[in-house]
Length: 218
Image (cartoon, rainbow, N blue to C red; front, top):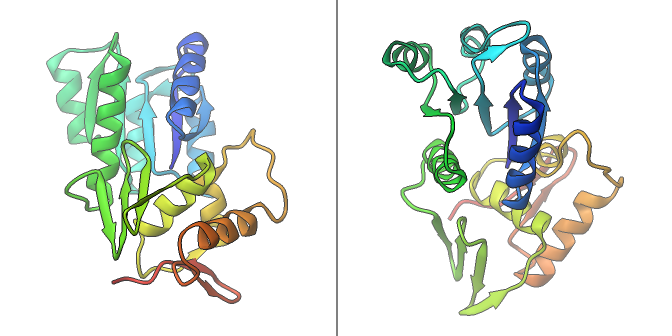
């Protein structure tokens, strides 16, 4: 899962980015509205964390323009906790509103809830044939045996299994796995897919030549 963080407090942004990395999210941080909007035009994100007070405009300005094009979840993080600001943010299309200061565990729970809702999931657990995937604990069970996956192997499995029946391009999958400051080897995606097929079962991930990869819908 890839998150865009729009926050001008560099110390807070650094702490949040590290926390989210520890939770296995890829994170791109921006401190300007124009930079974040430009990134959204060219990259895929699963969730936006949005501050309101920004050097080149208001977070509401970002939200207005962003909602004209995209429907992914937006969680506002701000010290402006008046009822009027909350109502305005929600009316402009934000999905949730968390006042600063906040507890990190609450932020993590709200992020999980928004991503789960966006994917149309009722819980954090996905069953696929003889495989069970727990999105919160990041545990995978196949044929009643625990399967050890690396961070990026799990992230790849999560992206594919939440989009069962849909072909995902190489670019979209790489965007799910890596942030801008990550180094990507040319064959990294293929290596991860090979490892998932080997650790789970070979027919799990289908190659659609010239297009991308998919997990068939059961």
